[in-house]
Image (cartoon, rainbow, N blue to C red; front, side):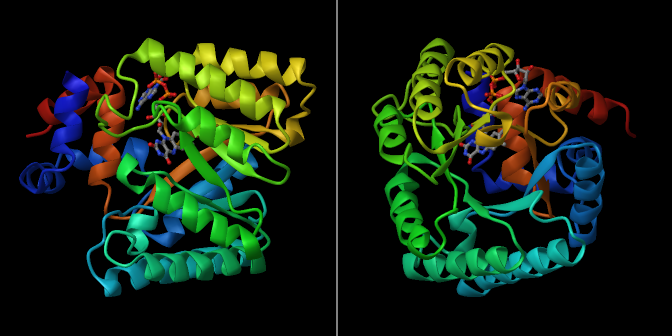
Length: 306
Ligand SMILES: Cc1cc2nc3c(=O)[nH]c(=O)nc-3n(C[C@H](O)[C@H](O)[C@H](O)COP(=O)(O)OP(=O)(O)OC[C@H]3O[C@@H](n4cnc5c(N)ncnc54)[C@H](O)[C@@H]3O)c2cc1C
């Protein structure tokens, strides 16, 4: 219920104006976002890499509505990738890209062309790209673009969301050699017709999908903070004889950092998803929706400021 309300607010421009301009928001944002500028992203990446973590960087922004915005997002990724290469932070750092930020909603060809330019820049910098997955109305388009990108850039990664009923079948299609697949629970508000609604059903689906990916030939990226699912991931790695270089765990910047460090200590590959940029509203609201305790954190920040 609370989750639905927050996710509905994440699509409201009125609430966005209220939250985005409130001074207390900055404190909350700082916990989940590395900073506003490319240099902030590089600084956070350096710190994480020095601690033994791998990184995927997300230039915040989604649902762009003009070609200029989409091209500006592409250019930011090109700059970021050049700087990561020059700073010798690749291949430890890769990038995560939302196709909606590249124009997917109004010009699929433009989104593809922009994504292709980013993939080429990533390859030149010695690293890879993962296409984030957004709401279910974009899944087919995103997987089509992924297939086209993989012709020239086979290491381009996909994201599949366990809450969608279709995902087991998508896992089967993508569990092939060289295929990088991030498995997450899913962060959007989706109707019952396409998505499991209860946490228990989503968790069971996650395990079925995890089994398909871990027993397949691709490179699974288990994106979750859920202690039970992480333990199951560790178990399946032993069961299917997957060494730490044949799969990885992924978690979000600022969430369960001690667990990220523990897994690194155990010898696993752990990648931290690091968002940066000014356009943090949608991202922050999804993080609040995931965990009521984050709302309390938000409220504390609100009451501790004049
Ligand atoms: C690397 C990465 C990339 C992702 N990419 C996508 C994507 O492309 N598309 C998409 O739809 N979703 C994406 N997600 C989000 C994902 O779908 C979930 O919404 C999110 O990870 C929360 O689910 P969970 O598996 O951690 O389990 P949950 O059941 O939500 O959480 C399990 C436990 O983890 C901790 N935790 C989880 N979330 C938070 C939080 N926000 N703050 C503090 N503690 C928390 C808590 O201890 C909680 O009890 C991504 C997640 C990760 C980690």
